[in-house]
Image 1: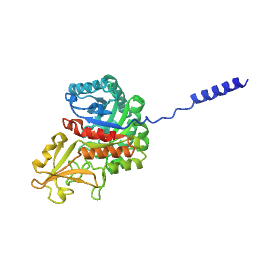
Image 2 (image 1 turned 180 degrees about the vertical axis):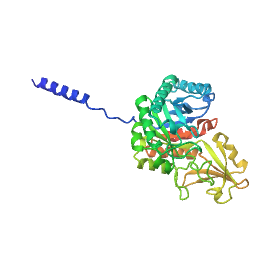
Image 3 (image 1 turned 45 degrees about the vertical axis):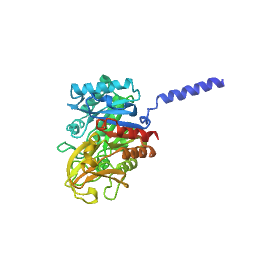
Length: 367
């Protein structure tokens, strides 16, 4: 009699639980991630140590009407080559990125329409299944605030971005990764995203903590400093603290690093060119860092407060800001000590032939 009563009670609670609506659960946090954005054609993949990476994000796909589309046959080949790497690197996930700087001109208009959001989400799933990729990274620069010159934006983008994330998660389920690239500056944090609504649905947010000074800047500074300085409050640490204050879990924050330098000309010989007026000159992949060598008239410095390297040529009045193996190791250690989700960088093909920058990240991650 007691056994029967117990069984009846268990069956009652089991039946009751079946009728309780399931609460949405956050996608689980993964181990520490090392994520590479990749902008190449796939012909150079033998150069890279994919065993040191958790994810490679192919950049970029774009909108074609209300569909996410691979632009051309060359891009299709590159994605196929990346996916083939998973046979020998089973830990590797291949993600498709939408947009990029000046790559999301129609995003504001398209994602304002619920029918278009549904069609877009369905097209993403179709691409995942066609190419056997593992998720999508949204690189809309930016919802609700000014980004690429001439790209439309509207205040409604902020909520429409939430609705887009919700649509994608419904269609993709939990099998596929869902992330987005976030600006690292106050206007983005305050106006572009409904953080409380979107973060439970996302695997991670990739903080673009680079280009702090950029091609539109008329003065020099550190474009990817780890810590803030009195003259430059925006930094990796600044962005991380803001995200945490907005309720973003540490395990979902991935900080950004730069595999490239930015240079300015017409920079006065004061403070070794740092925090001086100047005219933006060039983007220099780290594989071409010899352009900024002592043989070419540059003296290299390191800001102990920002924990960032820079270089200056007094003769040429040229200033350069970049990441190097030391700053990348420090960023990786910072991400680990702060219990963050990982580190990402733009962009894999900008590394040297011997992979000195990725090697620095990997080495610091293993200490």
